[in-house]
Length: 344
Image (tube, rainbow, N blue to C red; front, side, top):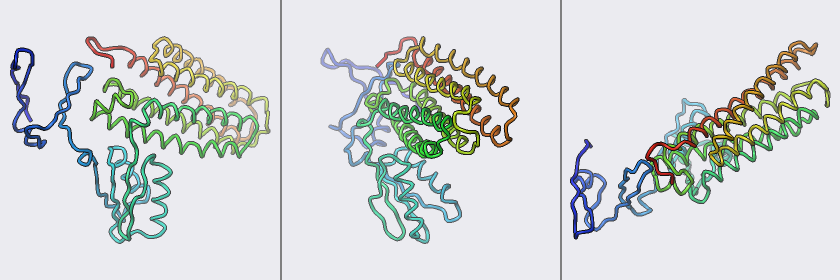
């Protein structure tokens, strides 16, 4: 609808009232006696929302999977419905689901989508339902859980490289799936918070403008997880012996990368601009250290195989430093209040 202006009236000597546009009232289905939710935003504007029954708030969708599309292509559509906040998604397949397709969909849903469960199925459909309550698992909780997994992965990836432990490296690779699950959960939370300021406060997003910042932060964290996974994968394919002296420098840089991530998280937790600036300085120092080791490795008389995998590990360590720098920069932006803004 186009912008409309309403003049404020004084009722009873102490109450301000304003009339609602009749067209809007009809479109949202409100009538005399219904309740409206009024939420004050950080920029002092008000959000007016009809209060509806919980049953009306359940969002459902039907998704017809394509026979011409690959499994991953179809599953990306399922993920998209999860991210935009559908509570119930009915999956349909034109010629019905085969046993293998049904089994794989169930496995992938349980492995990749936190809170989503299969609640019904027949020959031609599978019904997914979200049992996730946003306020029971806040944004801070989700980021904390994601951070702990990344830190344990970083430590074990460097240990697997130092001790040439393929089993530990394989475990690191497996844990990256958990990072992806939390990433999707947080994106779902943030998308919901953008449309519901009351929910935003419940999950810990005090200002709606911070939703974009957190979106960038968790994407950077997800990419850090990917690079830690890459370190573990490359360590499994190297032939250098355990405790090889030339790997000491890489081990030190790996430990520094972990400490940098810890410092970055600390600045984010407190929205501390000074800590964030320190983290950016450390990230630049770490990047320089990676470049120095990179030049040294190129001069070593190693096998081509070991050089390729070692250089790939160094690239990932450098990228981790850059993503920590990105998180710190967003933290600084979030730590600065806009003039006239209320911090909730």
